[in-house]
Figure 1: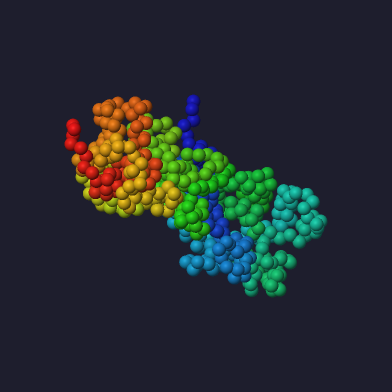
Figure 2: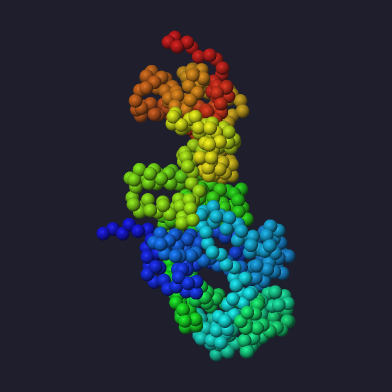
Length: 559
């Protein structure tokens, strides 16, 4: 019997079977976490998406599941980020939540990237219960758990030491164990974690900072603190505290000596809890983005860059259709973008008429809606190739785009008013405009000739010139997409002495290619371009006539 479940369905079944309600009550807690230490990229989105889709699959099973997302904004700033002045060197070692936003847009460095990322998540239909670790730690939420780790510091040290490569330390293991503490204070004077714990007694941490300050910090219940557990203890502590049933992790965390392996042991031995069910997710990269695309780092691989040209449901599909452990690249080069839309539209057509594979249809269902509602999709998904090429040749003039798109609709639908048609083309229309104006390389853009190309005209033979005059003269009679298509395809047939409705043959197709090449050279000084009927409609009747012939009237019919 074939298993028609998606990967998120299978994971949801496994989580539902193994889940044990934690401190949040009967809910099944599925977690994700990101450190906002820089632009939050498409690889980070893999973790959030994996958790989100498993939660959606659980909810389809009527399981009360919650997506709990931790912002690790209490991590230290490790280095001055690219593009930020050397003056920010003074903040290295401070928590990300305490570092000012270099761009002056938000209250902190961390919040700058959090807000950018959450805006993209909202567009993608991802809703989470968010917590910030700066708030959790500073208000004393974890004090009891920190005390537990400090009281059992030798156990923690031995667990971590077992995973370390022998011979990498100069000092003996006994000396290191005696001086080891799994908690790092942030100095109350300089605000940095350049500190060393000297002693811990009576629920109080005594430390010295590189700035020469000596301080004491109480870990008693209800006391606000400034500091955090080391990562490999922090993670399992949170599993136990939140009762996490599922959390994906990258390949490095799942390595034999990685954080998940160590955390699996510490959550049991230190906190009496259990490790969550997990799955490995692999890297996601971005290719083909222009430097003009959005994002804090120009063409950075951040979700907003991709959402500039790919509608939200399609982006969801890129993640949902692959197993989490499969790495992939999102190619934003012009042709790959067009192919993605074509493939996405084909899945939609198959889902609509029921001809698709059940697995494909189920994956698509996760892309177009969530338990919170519908995901933004284009109600009238006209081919992206049409929208993109029209946006290109019209310099993104929306009025002209709407006029041309209407010509491509079935005749019974062409009376739709402009505002309604524009609404039904979104968000794909805006994606196409962005594609044409921000992504399409200059050498691939369609630049309409400003005047008649007499030099190119002089290179043509008499028959081709006359055919172009005939074509230009008949444009006014055929200024409709279907009629224009028939006209431009018929002219090469007539040049061969055949009827305009002759069936295509290799000879006819070759003649058409050669004639079309001539038209492109006269219209846009290129051998190729958008479909000629669309191109002509974009240029307009009078200008098309001026560019396609020398103005000499065609010979009377039948002469």
